[in-house]
Image (cartoon, rainbow, N blue to C red):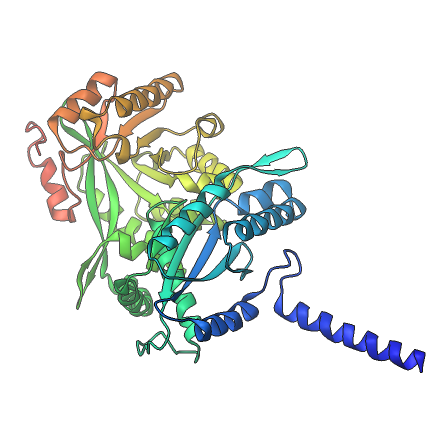
Length: 457
């Protein structure tokens, strides 16, 4: 009888363990996505009075480099530390691990400002270093959240695609998370209805982009990069525009994420470069073409070779091509970026570091990579005339560029006063609306009709 009782007890414990494993994350001990959805249903049923339910989705910033640099064991310790901090931040709610470095938070609330307080508190806590062994690891997070009210029906096309209002709430929080990331890391954002409309538009565009590239709907626009002393065009940055037959002109802030999410970014860049090199055949032979590489393209081992092949097809001198590398690509793909930079420069292709100061890069990258030019982010230029702090920052950037023999190119120059101040700080080359907005090929060609005429706003 004792043996039978022990067998029943063992079976009960085994079943209890299996139930726990099915509903929890083994690493952090937090509920998993399945349990999170179930608890969301239960919370919605228990709401009373003016209470509402909030769903937060949180994605860690700069976590992949931790795994890549220190290994998964350290990465696991970081995830456990994050789980504890999140649990400490939320007194009355549910914290779950719903993906690799993605967490969810569920809570009831009555006062609207409670949500912003929670999001701000979480961001602050996750900005603090995490201590693992002798390491002091700094990460961060971005947060999106949405609000659900009891008894509210939702009939939009995305809400019940899988039959779950909880999944609809996750999608909305994910949309808000995406919006937070587009504004810059370390931010939080609440879902707005227009985000859902934007998603519907994006899904439609994702289905159309491959055909748009093949049919030539996506075209290069050109913004001049100039010698600010003489007002002479030195080169043009190639910027993608989608001439959509129904929606009209679609700009890069919509187009690029669509191209990246569909895996079309490489094909689109090749198409734009081919057309740009054809257009540039009619420019003076010392004017260069500057093309942007997406961070995702560093996963393509052939990206540098393809640039050379396209130039060879067009019989276009490689010395007249510049490739712009986004700053955040260095943090996530440093080894790949180094190989691409070295390979391109071996063939006399110029390489520029784009949007310096806006992302992850530090001065150390300027020592590791031999960039030909550095484009100072517009955030330091827009208010330069009235900001002593920005003046000191730009002055410092120009100083170490001169020491390293790198050309400093400020972006976002809109006034003559800003241009003159930058010249005084030692910047000789610049880009911005003062010299010209992005324009189609015929308008770009017009810059060369009179070489003697200075460039004006």
